[in-house]
Image (tube, rainbow, N blue to C red; front, top):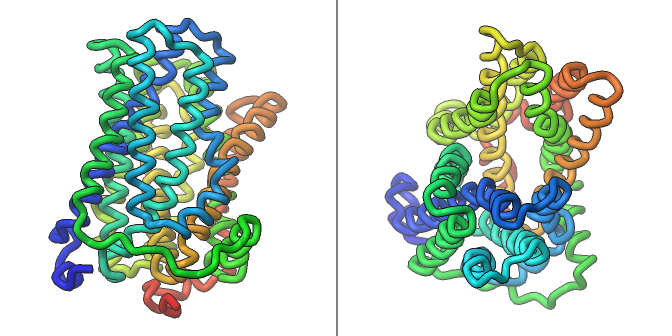
Length: 417
């Protein structure tokens, strides 16, 4: 690591800037594909609703199937190399869609395969990504670096679908997928320019896959704060899954809003994430990395109760206020939790621990969506939102039984072994 980068702001670290720019390409491309991929299926292939739903599910199915094994394998490899290889794999996979469409060879079966394989590449990319940052910046800069990355993620979430919709209108859905592919290629190119050496994995004898997965899960369980972070995150994502699954139905049928306004409300949460990313480093310095993580989980929580009160009058703002507040909360707490893991987890275990968290969080979202649908079917959509928003308010309770409320900074915890 460059000694100069340890004593200056994270944006003065040239390698971090290259890493950040790689995220711009990757995240923006991924969010453009949120619009373009289903539109290719609908407009070009005239897919049925069940096929479109399956296509959407296949994009995230790899997180459930490969999430835990990915952590073991990433810990055995050079992290930057993993990101570059998976970026290039996504480029080839996504670019194959416009090529096949041009040649008249595109089929829904091919779309299913590309969606799953590109999702699998993204699983490895994400695990390596969260594991790689400590190689580029000093421990004191981790919170700042994670905050800057969160700005990119939230900004891309906001801008990507709009850019995707415009590109679909201008050049058609299949060739919009080429813009998504170029995002992955751009990411790989910027990663290749990073000067900091890509650390080799520890020269230990590779352990069996299941034992490696167990080591990561046991580390999460034995660390009291990690265990409670995991419990709180699972509860939070259960409620998020339910609300995401019911939001369009709620706004369209219960509240009676026009599609354009529904789109604006669903995007509003991105502003909270961008704001949190911009202010995250400043708040962490002023308040403390641990304390701001705690406050970000507790202070915005009551805003969740506004969402079920949304109506087709001035109270339509309740949905936007809730979305912004909870997205701000999620972004800041995510930065804090990632920073804690990067600060305290031994480097040789970090991939497995990050993968364990991602698997727990991703598995709870579809479960929440299923539970939300069951409750809404039995008691109505608005009642279901009350149930899950109350759950969101109390999702921080497991952390009351952790050291977090008594800490100011994560540096107060025992340093990485």
